[in-house]
Image 1: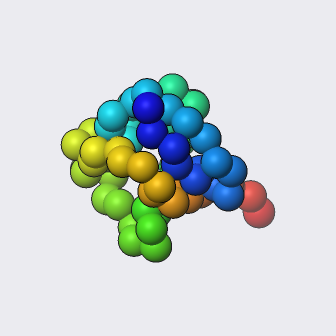
Image 2: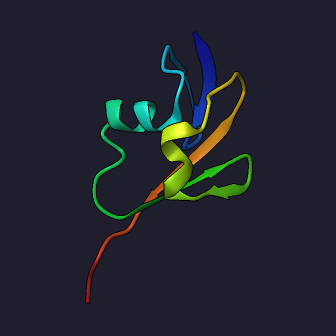
Length: 66
């Protein structure tokens, strides 16, 4: 079990891979960007990015408008 900070909230998860966590929380739909500990994670790396304790994850959803 890992303890992480996700968008400013402390959560616990048993997921081991970043994309699995994002899918489980329904954060991987549409256009989005992920930053971990201040560094942008390319979408091509989400399926192989390992989770570990105390990561600070920010997920930003793109919203269209006019």
